[in-house]
Image (cartoon, rainbow, N blue to C red; front, top):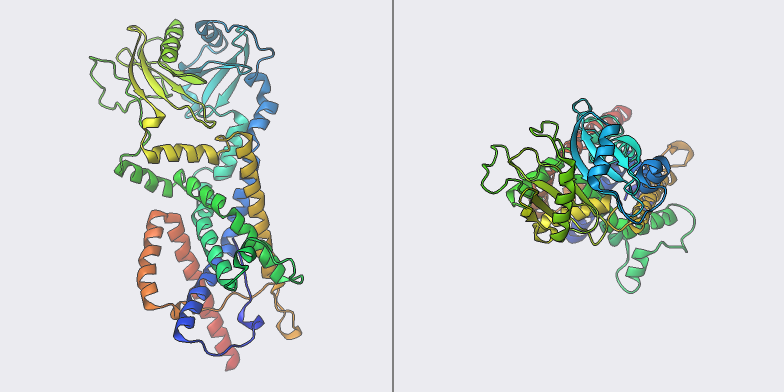
Length: 478
């Protein structure tokens, strides 16, 4: 929550505080200065993240509009054509590449037959087949199952289509959002008078306040308080797949043995390859043996008998020594994410991994990502994300409005914006606070490298600005 509050110029002088009140003032002044500068400098990144995230929330509807011809059938039939027949039709339409996966169509959804093509890198060609007629509805270049419109909006939100460099913008936003939220909550709490009605004043703006900075601050802070849990959730889940903090998060999962389990594809009696890591989802362009489309029907039947209902994705075996895999891909609550390895020749399930048996952190990470993407609770999830994005934009606008409203307007002291909170508040913070606080900040900067680097940049900017102003003041006085 970006915020500015009344500076020393706009508040009446008060008696010298006692030691304890001075310490409290030190904490408040330090938080205020951090909140002010972080809000001013990070808010533009948050605006971009909110706008691009808002656009991403409507991807399911956009997909139906843009790619509906490929994704949806013209008419739902009574019985689906054999899966092998659908794959054969897709192969005729797309003779190049290796079969990577098949997602059987259900209801009004088409069957997705995915092919790996070496020239596409991490992209794939997906052929969409009407499961009731066997008609090929079209082919799209997809990225981990995402259609072009979703991929474009995802890249826009993650990196503004600027590649690795662009990912810094989203990591800066996520790395500082939690600081702004917590700082804003503390500042707003400190501002309220103790006693009856404090909670009411916290959760609602002061509508009785006259027009000006006080009313704007009420809307800014109260709205930010209502959005706090959602914003902290977005910051945490966004950081899990950021470039630098995400690597540290992954290392932490490895250390706690909390990665998402991968079902083993090694067939009984076969030696595990040296680089075997379990499920080799996607990337079968190096398949040593040809895939028999007829085997998909047997594999799917075995998986269904093993309890895998709902939408699934079938991944062919990488070679003669590994099993096929079938994985549930239902991301809507309650999720279905169980996976089995199948030996079609023996007609058996050789291994399985159930979502219920995943480590807790792996479960929470998976659910958090789906909620961040607006998938977990369907349209309700999309509406909540859109409300968070719009609310954050309002909070930022009110923050900048306060900055403008508090500008000096006297003839001899006019300025385009308000002055920053007074420097040197850290000197009033008690020693124990610095002893505990500095290591915590260093640790946060280590875990969130982009936060650490930008914090150092802010401190350097503040020191340079302060030195320049001191020099200017001395020159004027002399």
